[in-house]
Amino acid sequence: MTELLTLAHDGTRLAFRHRPGAGPTVVFLPGYMSDMGSTKAAALDEWAAACGLAYLRLDYSGCGASGGDFAEGTISRWTGDARAMIDAVTDESVVLVGSSMGAWIALRLALAMRDRVAAVVTIAGAPDFTDWGLDLTDADHAALARDGYVERPSAYGEPYRYHAGLIADGAANRVLGGAIDIGCPVRLLHGQADPDVPWRLSLDVAQAVRSSSVQVVLVKDGDHRLSRPKDLRLLATVLDSLEA
Image (cartoon, rainbow, N blue to C red):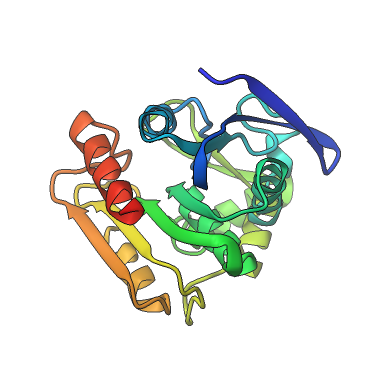
């Protein structure tokens, strides 16, 4: 495993692991309440090492090994965190691989650094999830005003907590509802048995991006994580095809 590195940014210490190699650098962007120790992040590390490619995996502020308060995390802040760590390891091109919420961040990064993004790959992408994913009730709005957050049950462990700042900031970072003006190749993987993010959302993203090189790969029995060995092999195949 590569050495754990840190970077001072926006008042906290961000943690990441970087494997030097040939470019473009492959960057893994975790999902909500996930981190760079996930199965997919580790599998991509092995794939990049075997291919001799540069690879960056990271933790947003308030997540994993990074400092900071998770309650202060927003799409804007976490996008800025990822950009700072990317810039710390390379000023060349990157391939952004975003899982779930990480796909939203990947799209925001691609819009912000168009000239440096060689490709975007999403896995069960969940852009704009603060709009369509929470279905806030009157009781939720009362909880946000009283507690500053709402909770939702999770099949992956402790309940997911969504803070008021994240929800408000999400509205300012929407990518759907209009054109997503990126021209690089885009590959969108999604399981049709995903209970958390509708797979048709990846079709919406495919329709919205302006790139002429867009492919949606649907896995009929795939769940939200797409972390089974066969799913990881599929991800590697998609990345290999981009490299070719």
